[in-house]
Length: 167
Image (cartoon, rainbow, N blue to C red; front, side, top):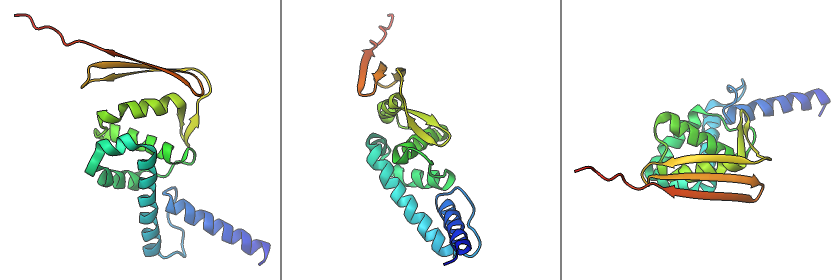
């Protein structure tokens, strides 16, 4: 195979991959039905990977997970960096924007935000100290988490008492 042919094949493969992951339109010369089927299979695999890395989010969504993830995957391309953890992070942010983020997954999201920094390409590991606060409304609990360095975190929970009602 000539160098020009190899380069043309490499460009076509890159274009197909970009289309399959939602980054580009389908290039000419590919069967749209087969590409659609492959895209659906990749979205299904993508969902399973997010479930494995975000188990609390998946558990909290229950039966709503699949239809919500299908909508998300159709709208949002696969992140370039960070793998399933980054995809789950983007899914969580997408759920917040849609008003569907479950409170039961707040601590899981907090844990990820302590360890990783979101970027336009996905997630990258944090290197310095990080402080995060979250209010858990149903439990009336304030959570303070500090990551001092990789592998060293401290978490505090402050449960606020119910206000006494005046007679």
